[in-house]
Length: 280
Length: 277
Image (cartoon, rainbow over all chains, first blue to last red):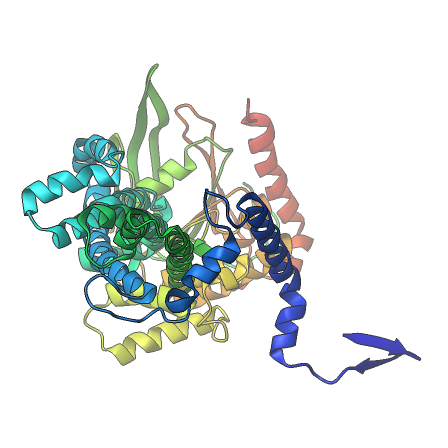
């Protein structure tokens, strides 16, 4: 912020970083806030108090303020837990299932991507399997494993693995010829080729796959938990519906959306650190 | 070419006349849907140790194909390419390439790009020795300051300097450059040509370089190989470039023989073997 007087530039006393951030991003903050307020008003108008349909935002807030909003970590035993604990339970399942699918998916993607024969053999199978909706895997998982918890994790695994495999495969196949030529003229060993060329070149593609995968995991976990039960945000939603606690259900949906967004941003943030600027 | 003007021209340093790189009756045909397409037919050429040879020709004349058979990325359909009598069958660090688009690894710094090559070429050297080689070659191309920058932070000229440092750091028998300065602006290009020349003078590496630029070839090379057009391209003529070394660009440009040679090459490329689209 500068102002000119008699050709001299005066600088205002330096502002703290918060005000600078605000000045820079105020539009990005104000505009969504306005949109949210407008949305809440429309919602409130469509669902006035006393009507038979869904509760309006004010009623949702009143119904869930105590304990669901102010105390996300209460624990009354059984399934009667705060939303924070419910979400953590779901995140744990996602963490296990997604980690497994990341490890297996990257490995399979690199092996299949680097091997034309294998690629031609299995790619059609992957293309069929990846179109199967997450929940369609649940019965077969239950039939095979016979336990709820591992079945839910299996659904996460099988849902998120296809984009990871497919993007990793594409990354390996898109390896620029120049880099291959460098490896050939230097006669790099297999290990050096993998560590210095193939894997780093594939990292941006892997992260694309991981980002799609984590989104799908979160989609799948909510649905899977509805069916397998236990502690978890998915079953919480189903339970709230069965008990006609529509306000709790709506609050849970908002939380699910926010957590999904945070997961996506987390992977994007890790990618922004891991991927060199020239490759983006 | 007649070399009538001898006043400024000294005899070249004697070089080892044992054949160094031999391109022996080399032909290359590619299969196409319409049958075999001959790119090169019966090419014969010998490069001697320590020579700087440029290859010029219109696009599609097979000069890249020829270069790729020396580097080993490509095999001749007939005939053979030998380096010190050894048949070339695959790429190797003894024939290090400098690629037109640099081919640096973007996730590695300039230092790391050179280090990877040094590490692979000299697996038995100690870490300190390898470090020294890398530093020495980065200094040689004036990149000590930028050693820890990644390629995207470097200009085109600096990237190509890294590529040259990487290529020379592993002490290749022959340095192969595929239009190395083609993507650079005129000023950077001239700077790099002069650097390459002074490096070449010190290292005495044999150099084989493709170019599109007659002035570049006349400034750099001992001999200029002029290719005829494809299909079935061949070496049309080989021009000796007799300017004394070390060469000075301004001085060469004043030499009337420079224009004689230049016009001769232009005549070859744009009249006798004009490119027919």
